[in-house]
Image (cartoon, rainbow, N blue to C red; front, side, top):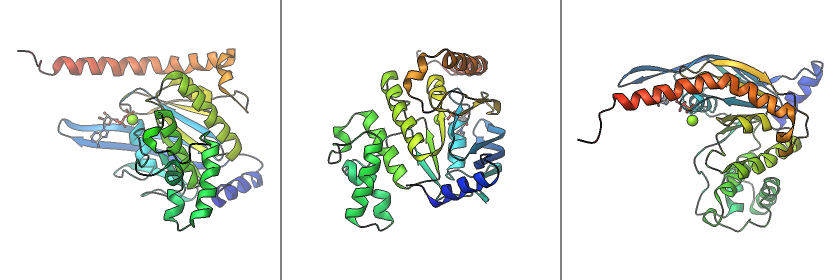
Length: 291
Ligand code: ADP
Ligand code: MG
């Protein structure tokens, strides 16, 4: 089940001699917020591509501007300079080709798993039987077979995030855009969920942009990692991850995996230290609550 936009782009890539076309192009992207303490440049002149069918992670310490990029790419935030393009189109608001998965819980508590996942199909007017059949396909894909009739409150946090991912996949977006979807989960659950994501990537050739602050997750899942600087968020370095596919979480035991983790940490250490120092300085300038 591939959207025609992806199929067309893949065809165009083949025509261009196999060189992967960018599904998403971010060019000279900057964003400044006006705050009570003056202007804050959250994103500063960032440029990078997400090629068709590839998995790209954007990594950086907390507060470096990742969610700002996520919201601009998803068309939820405007006021930026530079451009975000999907194929030939410039993103100026929510775009049909982009499916978003948020960090916060976003399942509908009053709907069962199957009716959560079938929601986008229901909105598009697909009949009940057909939308349930399609929803089952995506539920199986995220490993929730047998839980179709459960309500979100009857599931674990990791399962609820999988429902949210299946619901976004049911839109059949050309580009899957996720902002720290596993941040609230423990490390083991996160690694095992990573296996599901790797499988989806393999089955759908789903173009994906993942926002994360987790180095292991970025290396486990990505073809390319864009490392950001801490405030203002710039591209510090782009690392192509040449680990074999198909991949599973077993990859984390390999020497090559360890070398990539070290490489990313090398770049991030300075940025994370800067973030920590700023956060500590801010607590010192804040008035003490104790009298
Ligand atoms: P991250 O997702 O990497 O943690 P964000 O993109 O949320 O970072 O934030 C980057 C910077 O921009 C932070 O300093 C944050 O305080 C600031 N910022 C984000 N959104 C707004 C906003 N709506 N108004 C003012 N400042 C904002
Ligand atoms: Mg964020």
